[in-house]
Amino acid sequence: MFKKSTKAYILMDKKNKNTEEIFKDLKKKHYGIYGKHSAVEICSWNKKALRGEGVCYKEKFYNVDCHRCAQITPTVINCHFNCNFCWRPSEYMKEWEMNEDLLDDPKDIVEGLFKERIKLLTGFKGNPKVNQEKYQEGTIPTHVAISLAGEPTIYPKIGEMVGYLKNKKMRSIFIVTNGMETDRLLEMNKNKQLPTQLYLSIVACTKEMHQKINRTKIKDSWERLNKTIDIYPTLNCRKVIRFTLIKGMNDSLKYLDKFIEMFERSNTDYLEIKSYMHLGLSRENLSADNMPDHQEVLEFSKEIEKRSKLFKIHNEQKESRIILLKNKNSKVIDFIK
Image 1 (spheres, helix red, strand yellow):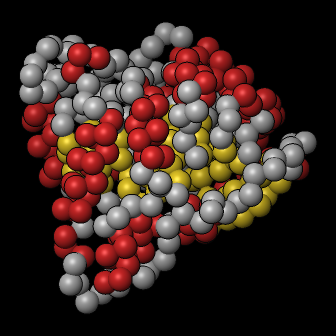
Image 2: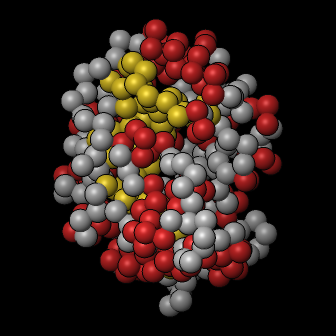
């Protein structure tokens, strides 16, 4: 449980570590930490882009500047789930509520994490393998992915954070949500504080599968997810459903019609079918055999295209094992200006 403190949340995990000790662990894993509950990291594609070794699928699909992407979270140790496929440090994520008396200010979080990000990029300055013009550009983000770890919509001021980022003239802001905080999404929509592009993660089509894969901590999570799917068409922003394909868990074609019903009910603009990757903490829960190759992801996506009335294969990136399908009725232009 949280206890009031002027310094930080005091949250005990299963190894009896408090928040300060957890943050020390995260720093060893190359996270930049700001304040009481926020973090930033330089992702592998960010590093590759600076070295001229390729870009992530978000640049290929949506015109996001990969080398200028800041991947952050205001909820590094807060999530409703303990998903078996998550490679983030979910062993620390025991709480799905935040004490509003102890919240850091959205502006302070953004500016603090941007400063931490510059520190994490220090090793690229002067590196002969790095394009120094790109490095200089990379120190000033134009894209923010609020998706690093935890569930960002647990943070009560997430709408204010998006609003502050918009005022900073970010080209794009992405949020990935598990769909548990429906009312917060509706509030953000009402206040015109939704991101440029919102991702809803769906990996299960039955309550039993949901409990097995997402390993939820709240009793009504399946109902909450479906409520978010139902209101998804009303949200005034670009929308994506992200589906992580896990061999032996959610890849059977016998489930596909149920998944398609959920996808179509959401009326999402895009559908990303992505392979589970055998990385990080997920290796304690799943094996490499659970990881589809790109061809398997493609074949699964072709079956969606065959059965669905809405979705057609639109793009792909083999290196990321991801297929993009687009809603044929969507008027969204792929590339963000």
